[in-house]
Amino acid sequence: MQYLAINFPPISEVLNWRPIFLGGSSFAFNKIAVITMLAALMTLVLFLVAGRQNQLVPRGVQNFVEAAMDFIDNSIVRDAMGPDGAPWAPYLTGLFFFIFFSNLFEVIPFFQMPATARMAVPAPLAIAVWVTFIVVGIKKQGFKYFRNTVVPSGVPGGVLIILVPIEILSTFFVRPFALAIRLFGNMLAGHLLLITFTVLSEALFVKSIGLVLLPLPFAMLTALTGYEIFVAGLQAFIFTTLTAVYIGDSLHGGSH
Amino acid sequence: MFSVIFAAAESSNPILPAVPEIIWSVLSFTLLIVLLGKFAYPPVKAILNNRTAKIQGDIDSAEKSRAEAERVLAEYREQLAEARREATRLIEEARKTAEVLRRDLLAKAEEEAGELRARNDEALRFERERISVELRDEMGRLAFDIAERVLQFELDRNSSSALIEQFLGEIGATQS
Image (cartoon, rainbow over all chains, first blue to last red; front, side, top):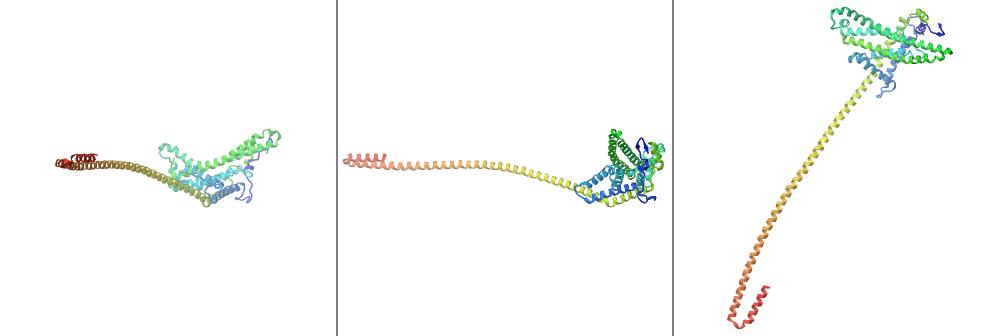
């Protein structure tokens, strides 16, 4: 593990966490499970507290939750789905906060691990979205949904031979994969970057000669920590927006 | 460095999802969506909707009050203008009435003065006539008296000088 005095942990050490209890079974409860549970719990507590406060002039938690809700309602639900997307607001709000908090644990001390950097978190979310937009499409448009989706209107027959397979591929296969891999990749990369600069800072700190260079990796680490907070929000926003767009497509029919 | 990472990667795949983690993440996400949708989200949404409704109501009622105030102001302005017009009209009317009254009074006064003058003239004429009649009577009487005295003188020359003196004295008394 020693390489030029820099002690890089093996990747399994920074991604695979030992079970806390129920080890060995399929229900092994490890750090990722703790984080996802906490992410869900924090979201619920925030909303319950905000709902309990119920002040005309919102402060603190209520203000934060209302601002976030307003942002999701206006910038995600209304923009991507239009007025009839309103019933999907709670689902998208939950999705946003769950991803955001799961991401945010990347920079929360002692956890320092984004749950979304494990494929076990983004993949089921992406599958849930995939199932949702297909079910909504069938419910709204019947089985014509598939035809409406893969056969764009106003395209000459010859082009359809190329276009239909592309549409099938992009809508039903690429969408869920892209959703999952975008979130997973971004968070994993951020996590590894933070580890890299932490390890560098630590190594330089240990080696007295390196103290001269210490500020550089440490400054980078500080900057990256801030950047990762931004990424946590951004990725949650992207995932939620794309979900809204996909469900909106299913609601409104072949709009592309 | 890379060999270390790759070596570690061989021991457990960092990309494939682990079954226990899937179970817990699905469980927490499902619980979150169910509980959020059922208990946590609606109250906050209700707060926002109520506030929106309240603010909208406040704006509407403020708008209504403003419109009402403007209407009342316009009404008052109209009334003020009306009152001003009325006042001007009244003053004008009073001035006209006064003018008519003045002319009437003047005419009447002139008429009365004329009447008075005529009456005076009449009285004067009457008085003059009366005086002249009286004078004539007096003259007649005097003439008669003189004639009588003359006749008496003719009859009685003896008492002449004393009588003439008396007569002349009487005339002098009458003239003065």
